[in-house]
Image (cartoon, rainbow, N blue to C red; front, side, top):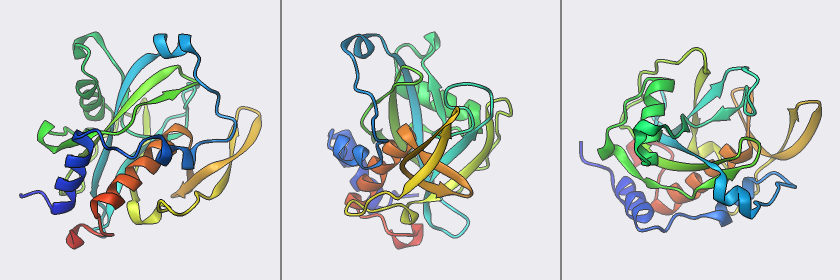
Length: 220
């Protein structure tokens, strides 16, 4: 099918390097997020993730999130985009990494023609990763096949449920180890979207708003 106008608009924006960037990300940034040292900047590991846009069962434009299993890792039990660490077979191409991990983790094979472009890379202090998000889209809700050891569930978050560029993100309480933090976040089916993934989602939302996304696929 022909891409809707808003899809073509966001693709042109991202491929020309005009993603909203830090200004959008910081609206969902946890307070006290540590700054990046020069050494971390040089030696952080690399990862690629997919921010996959698709209609939900009601036809609303949504982004695919996965709920990680409770495996004891730094992001155990949190919401994230499908994606993961670069591997030697990816040959230094983080888009290849992101698409491979999306296929492995949630069973969705995204064709390169459905990739719209990169958002702004983000450093993740707890895991020491530089994460590069790529936006992609599907005209239909994918049939998900979860990698049971890593993914507990898949959730579709409607873009229309997210704060706009002129709205603050609501404050949420999250538990990290033995501490309870108050941080910008959004509730998604009983789970809290916060931290780095929320920051990337905030940038995605602003990019979609700029591109003229309506609340539903039919409105494009």
